[in-house]
Length: 224
Image (cartoon, rainbow, N blue to C red):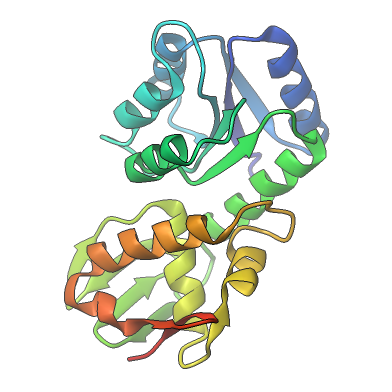
């Protein structure tokens, strides 16, 4: 199996080394960048980058500017590192297409676990497996989603979330269960994260967004 390559972007050399060492120990290849400009150069120069770990606070281009630029051309999964947990900042990131936040200080082992979970869910499959319901088709091998035959663009996390809903069609899913299965068991988030992603997913699905029903006091259920 081909080794997966991770781009680590942080202006602190010690932080890059810490993350790099744990990733390499887990079998990943690592590319480093010390600021936003070099991150973009590295990303555009290497077509094999599977995931980006991106610090928010950097001189020059900050993490959000880098995220916004990359999202013009790519849906590569992006985990953002932030020294603070501010709802407005998180919502801004989710609007721009970030897949997950990790707040400093963090456990390197937990970060690597999240990297692995995201790559497993977004790396496709060798089969031609598809999920179809209510006019929505998910081509899991091509990592593509079609609504009434028209392809729509979803972030990696939105793709995972829709897949989880469709795999559990007709089942009421609690927010805790969604966090555990889509964001991984060790994600220390809250309901805002899920609700924000569901709102954006519904919007992108258009009329088919109504298939994702709110179950008051519980969470959500996909019905077609």
